[in-house]
View 1 (cartoon, rainbow, N blue to C red):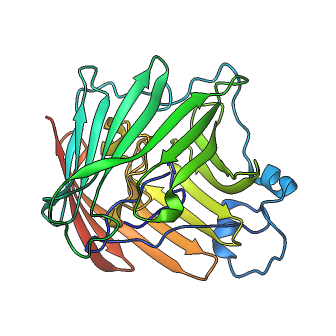
View 2: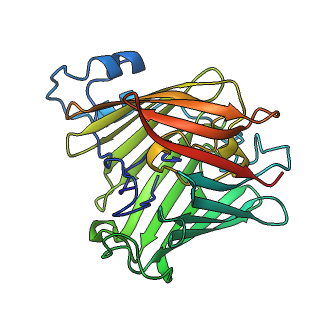
View 3: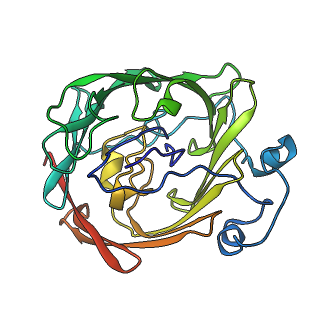
Length: 332
């Protein structure tokens, strides 16, 4: 994967596989005049010269948040935590391991490891730390050859890369400050400190993220709109560079394996771009992507389910062509 601006974000922040790994173009976006999700997706060619990141426009897009009594949903809070002991422990892409998960004694995600598509060398590794109300911070290490390697690296030597810290704001439990300090990355533009604010609706679902630049102004944002089941049915991201992206999803009624991980970082990887969101209840069946440059991609996903409903295998089709096969391995 390449650098992502804010896929959910949650959902937000990860540069994954490089060179020989499947990639999805990086989203850096900006929006047009506020409309409904359907209109936003279908009328992308409509010209608009207004700046969507001026204060009035941001306020028009920013959804309604909860209040001081909001209980944020897992993993950002304590609501809707997995009640089963089942956990996703490994993912295979075209028969090669591309991700593994390790959990602590309380069955919380302790470490995530992402691999190059040879299934051998590590690209990046994440370590998770928790407080009484949810996630506190995530530390990452990156393969020291990642910024320069063409193809696969020689080793899995990792060095400190970034720390993401989550802090509840003083005024409301429905807001979180997110600070990312990056010391080592694939691209130099990622280095330094990034400030962001996360917003949750009255049900504790992540619905908004805005990035604050060095002048304290909003420079980028991501909007997430849940459907009636709580799955992210529509998302939109924007930036000051007059670019934007929209995503629209449909879902099955089966349990989502990523929800068992409680991963607060986006798990985007090639065929999984945009669908591996730990807050979603179900599994994406279709995904429609449109951007401000006129790009359009359609994915659809075909699953083989276990008797308990969790997917065992997923076939991903990009514009009707088979894009890859993902296998899910669980602890039970």
